[in-house]
Image (cartoon, rainbow, N blue to C red):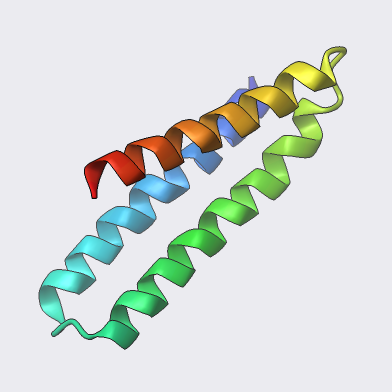
Length: 85
């Protein structure tokens, strides 16, 4: 149960950081530097979460499935991103 709460907390970090970023973006005048800082911070949060979750996923029996799922979700994210632009 404690591992589930840890994973849930890690999953909530991007939600909280996106909400905080949206509030800051509304409060401050935006510039290219501010946008760049916000995107770098969001990428850092996601990389930290992946760094925590991926090694634990590889402790299971089927490591290929967890790696392929991670790659597939990244590809799907890129597809949605390019479609929305």
